[in-house]
Length: 450
Ligand code: S3P
Image (cartoon, rainbow, N blue to C red; front, side, top):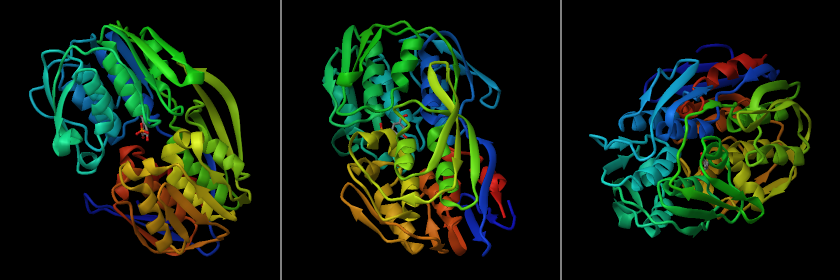
């Protein structure tokens, strides 16, 4: 892609994006759609795979991560139609009937694929599985899911005292537990619930604050006997379950919409409508955070689509003010914090983000990487052990050479920051965006008017 604003130098696997903003600036305008929700896409593929009968999925995210999920389940005997089709058809094998794969399962860059799948593999008796991922995933903590599964009787081996992939799993009949998770993680919660599907009796998870609840909603829709005690942040699945294939319409991903919300909120003259975005309350922390900073964001056309709340989001430029974010809000916007840090640079005052140490074990150490890369562009961000302190009040950053560290959300957050930088910004390893947002740069080109 070559234009006045964006230039891509293709040198696979390292793609360099150059953003050159004219002195007169740009504005973000138009109506856009964002790709399908990543969390819902993974779950639709997985539940479709283990249900009886056909699951029809519309709006599946075609990013690298859900492709990893699709490939893993295909290796275990699940038939999928072409992922590029408007409706993807999953022919479920029925719970307990995943085949032993002939080779190592590769979850690529995807923590959701590996952690959720582990619950299913560990509970499939008489099958042996080996799983791995890319170098980022192989350095991410797996002990958080292996611990509860081991309490259920699972047999899992891994590097570094059974905490890192590659992992080997000898499937077992498991016993039900009540797991009090030390962290608000939907991946941990979902892993244990998926293990509970094949386990006789009640498997329960209690989490310290509410994480995304897509698994709970979808498991209920597929017919699992699952109860939610929301005030006590507790979910119980009563196994063994029988799941029946369903129709899933995947809404746009609010985590992807967040880049445009911030881009328009900080760029004078901007107004965007982002259509068909999932607004599940366990995911809308970014809307609340930006609104707390006085961003002009409104929800239009609110509706429910196959069990998930959906709306069109309208965002207009307006002056922002700093705020402090911590506590229960953090898990509800965990993936949007890198781009929220970009917004904070343009807000009046100092923004503080706390209780977000989880960001250190994402696809990269997002606290360290965002602070160092934005500081290269002239920002003043101090890393805290569990967050960031961000001095605001900028009207523009300085163009610089920055790096995505192969982290998709870092890549896109830096591209949005580059729109507000004087001169030329070079973003190395920009292709990371395709993990969750394959056509991010096309949309960037489309919405930027000079
Ligand atoms: C996800 C849960 C979150 C999130 C990730 C997707 C999911 O991770 O960061 O991108 O689909 O369950 P944690 O469970 O580790 O917080």
